[in-house]
Length: 481
Image 1 (cartoon, helix red, strand yellow):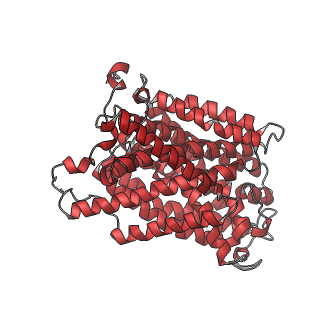
Image 2 (cartoon, rainbow, N blue to C red):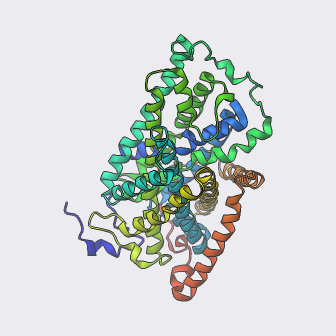
Image 3 (cartoon, rainbow, N blue to C red):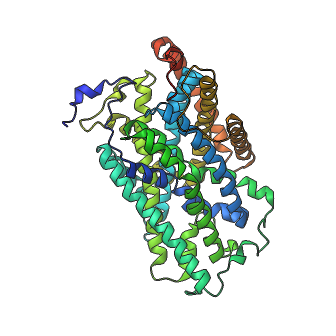
């Protein structure tokens, strides 16, 4: 089938997004698996281990349950109406146009700052081989390369992300198998000291107290950011009604294997006291094993993980920014697609703003990662909260007969979503109590003020874009089957 010409897709409306449904089930699965395997796990875990010790495993497990609740809530919404605008569209429909506007722009900001974090992490990893290269220069180089890659078709993006994710998944499974081999067979330099007893020795499972473990939840939640990315792919999935629920249902085993399993092995190989903030625990642990070039290989893998996450971020920001433009809530020029049906203008604007991360790497290279991740975490928490609240409102609508029942129901009902919302509120409190990460709570009010000013401007310039009724009020009741 011939590609639509540029002019025909440039002015697509919200209901006709103009994208090519070029992401197959194989690619969606790998995007879902790889989306959450990035900087937070590979680099952020080093800081979290130094703050809480082995009890970090419990933090990942508890947070993982909450993430699964959020993703099943998203699954209900995605099977009800699969669109690329995803979270912003659902907030707009069930909570009103202002909520959709704030959610769209906040999720866009989330991926912009996440892109900064990932390029920062990649620049840190480069120092393993070339400590003399300035951190800002490496970050800038990666940003330019990924920007160029994101101007291709969605099929090529999906294929590149598939192999990026395959490298991460294969590497983590390989690292777990090697670690289990060291623990059971005792080979390598670490064989004599490696033991699962490291999980409760050196001060016990909670060596710094339960309070320190609770404080790591904010770092842990950042590690899970990106799991919701499958929602953005809905508008370009070949068969979203089947592929998206399947991808969401794999989340429990992904958490169990890639997070819990990997941390149990790493913390059994090396006592938690030997891990340092800012140093990948994977690189440190397998460097100690003494396998030739092991540390270098793992450093390459975690570099790939960071670039993969940043690549996904560029994809997401382009789609979300274009959705806002289609709604009249961003400059109209950003609605335009190139001849490959990619939102090139929106990707370009997002990439330029990701360049702020390069500036931070130049000005405060030692603290850039912490500053950026704290802001990204708050943006992610807002997005997850909007997913849960939208799902609660959607449930109320279908139980009242105004909308069809979902074909992919979240277990536990609305009360489980309320518990997850309370957990997200706890994480915000923890961020406020943490002196290092409190900066995000200073940034967010300023961001909120900018959004309110922008919304008032839109009300005067384009009232139809901001004053419309939620979409479901105009929809007939559809057959639940």
